[in-house]
Image (cartoon, rainbow, N blue to C red; front, side, top):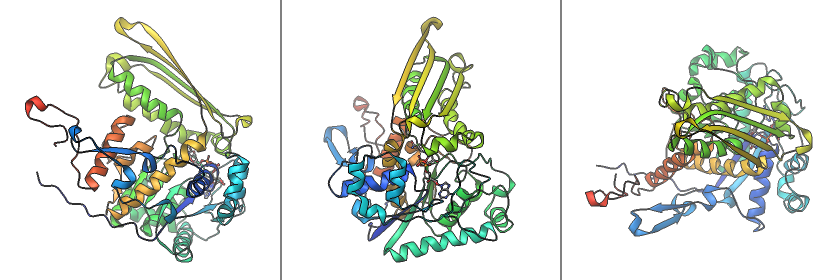
Length: 444
Ligand SMILES: NC(=O)c1ccc[n+]([C@@H]2O[C@H](COP(=O)([O-])OP(=O)(O)OC[C@H]3O[C@@H](n4cnc5c(N)ncnc54)[C@H](O)[C@@H]3O)[C@@H](O)[C@H]2O)c1
């Protein structure tokens, strides 16, 4: 079989990581990268920084660090920038978010204080619980998109950057299912010019990024990259997109446990998930419209893994309940409970309880770093459109129209690893290992 030879441009110069939203997740990322650069911390949780990948046949026993295999930008080539509705710089915003301890924050005070938010595109109709002053004005939504495009160009020039990526780290918007205005680039651009009420700020950022050939990753459940216009534009502009909604806490655990139960053909009668959290994200999600967006991404996971069409005996009647309760005393330290009612041989019932006391932004920050570095890699590899290999990072991975997403974390990792092997002209691994039949593992 002939292989396509991939040539990826080297990551020369500086890479701008631009985040709409400079709240808890974004500032925890900025602070962490600065602390790591100073040699004061380790990039725990980041696959690009700590991951190792096997290459070739098992008998070769050949492993490489992911960052040595693929040409990723180095941490000291990164420049952070962002937009927020609040005018505080990243140091002040990180203090407000109360994720990091004082000592660490003071250590990175200087670089963080220099990151000042650009004026945001904001619309009260899409985010109800917060209001800020650092907001752009414009006659039409197209004007606002143009202003964002100017921001990107100015940022690159002022900071001597070679290229940029954008990762959405701003609040969750009210759920906006795709409608006619979102169908094509043409209808969407008309909508931008006519201030169509169903075009949200996150869609305007996505549009601006793609028009500037800036790869875009959607860390929230906002509906943007899923839409027809965004997928069409990402192909037209030869720019990668991915999403949606970082898979960090409860859903990460779900996509580890649920495939395990299904793979053992164990039945599930119900899965009750509840959370308490007290950060600004929790406050925004306290609004039913924004919660609806989260509910959609959080709930989709189980219905795909426990397919009632494929396994009617096991999963035809699951009661799946998801709750998020805003509870200020907990701040960013979210607590999630899962009660899973399962049944085994002859229908005998059992229960599983999971209590995850996690830290939301500590789990999310390394994902933003990985998505930024991989999106940049994808751009240099001349990838365009939906990047399914990045499903590993998302609660609701986007796929080509008509296909079901893959939610199983370990299958997502296999896909990611094989994509990295493909990028570096290494053999793809199928884990077959049937040497007695003359079929070596590692062969296609
Ligand atoms: N932390 C996690 O584990 C996790 C997991 C999955 C998804 N997410 C998503 O990541 C996003 C960020 O989470 P967070 O905890 O940092 O929230 P946060 O509330 O601390 O920060 C979000 C920031 O976005 C700003 N913002 C709101 N609308 C904006 C706009 N239109 N333009 C620019 N800035 C805007 C807000 O002012 C705020 O500072 C949320 O959408 C959240 O749902 C987080």
